[in-house]
Length: 184
Image (cartoon, rainbow, N blue to C red; front, side):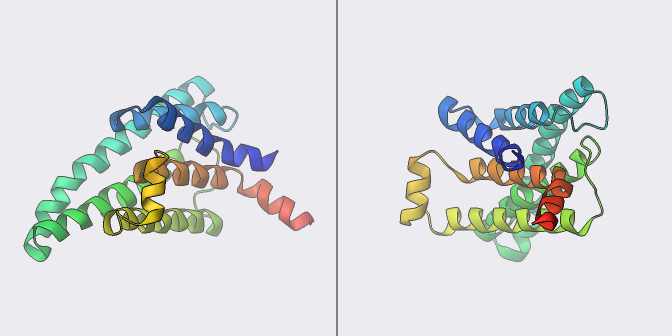
């Protein structure tokens, strides 16, 4: 049952994106809604306020990451040139700043430990996976794996939702996971 609770948001987020073909501007809404509804009993606040906050914070984090891209690009352009600064800026904005903002912000909405080593490792692991996957999409766009993922509509922003939903669920349920592993 715990395994199902952990992977369900990733599956639902993927299905929403793949089946509806919604535009990227709506990804934060679907992401926040899915995580908010599935974690209905894990809020620090009232559940309705928590759900609303989850959606709003998802959108705000998306917006902040989105507007940090041109700012970073402008700052990095003299150091790295046009192309490399754009690549680095996208990597940092979408796959480092965005996830860190989401993890940090959701810690105030959901009941999960902010300062545990497990939480920090999950966050670090999620960011590393996201940067790695997005780098593959940018540097190996014609590889068989990337072509396959694109054919089944799994772009790097869809994978972003899968990894982030999985990371948030692992953080929320880390005590239960640790307890079950300890009892084995």
